[in-house]
Image (cartoon, rainbow, N blue to C red; front, top):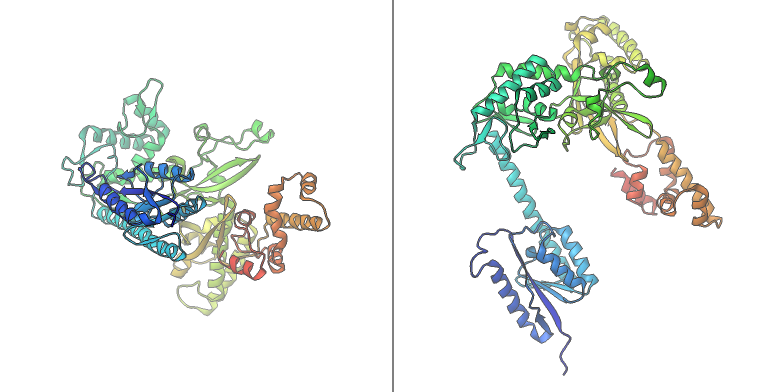
Length: 579
């Protein structure tokens, strides 16, 4: 009886930490011995161990970017490996998505995968199922560990502990590494106090920046700083703003949108802190544009923007506060004001409300950038709906009075008519607004509202002056669509245009016109047309909804290109119901 074909087996080993790797016999050696013994037991099947070692010591299984693993994959791709043997499957990867990709690569080259201690391989369907189940648990364990670490950091900060990272200017780490505290660096603390005093004196970050440079005030050496032509580090305006708004200087520890009493000493007293914050808030709300330049206006260019703002090419330009009715009234869930900005694309000007930290301090994944007209329309709709509901239910007055309730309802109807006709009149009634994930909380100005309703402020019911409403953000290509209150029909001109084009293209194809000829006629590329012609096969009910503007908020051309819908009309409806 002739022996079977030889199967070249590669042993892969991994250890997450470097602890113990310097020993004569470490964890990687133990894994290799166990795998080699298993391969020897399968010698009758033609298994043989390749001499090359594939060991990754001190590397996590959460990524595939490991030197030994990449060498192993190269050998598999070259067809020199027929079996990968590991001690446990989590030595290969702890990510289910990565495992699927690895199995696809192994299958493409006719290579199998074996776990020694778990006694199965990928050559059978049951082995694949078992591997998927075990890897799901391995990924779950990694995610739970990450959650525990995040929870520990949050709990530690709530106790006022410093949880690492570069210490801010004015502080150093405690000399005892076991104590997670900051200690005051008196030399740097003097610089911090001077910067706060300079801002109280000037109330302008640019002037503070110039004065700090003149006085020789320098940022901490480990911080990323602007460097002058002479090679000296200096404060940037973003650094100054972050420093002036960092609660660590009043003895608090910040965690996301909250702060807690810290275990370190304060550098700035509460009175100075409050005064600086008040000046910063006032500075955010004041106009940031120059007056209209007649020459620029004649040439089709908008208002002259402050050169210091427009010079930052990666930041949105700040718009005039007078041009946007909600300026100074809205904040995000972190308490950061939403500042009017604008951007120029293809000769068009787009206005936004942007979290101020995105303008002053760079990128932040938690920051907001919302289209200004859509946000203003959403807030106005919510306000109108709130007042109409209270007026219809005669709940405007604090004390019930039938005759006065009728008069108040009449005044409310006139006010609602004025708000409908004047798109910016609603802003005078808004005192402040707080945007959160999924909600918006609006507080109304009692004096302005009572004057508009011909009532005394004390006559208004408490429910009138504040309410919370749902607010949903949906992506529309690269923009954000705001859905607040009752959804109204909103036809998507781009979606309707592409739908009409797709129907015309499908009709031409049925008549025998080739796609190449159609592309030449329309000026589109063939790949472009292939991704969009599928709109012609949407269900009639869905096409009618698109024409009437009743489609799901997330249904855009970009979504249909990225996630092609099935041809089955019922399945299309089920898929889109989740948008």
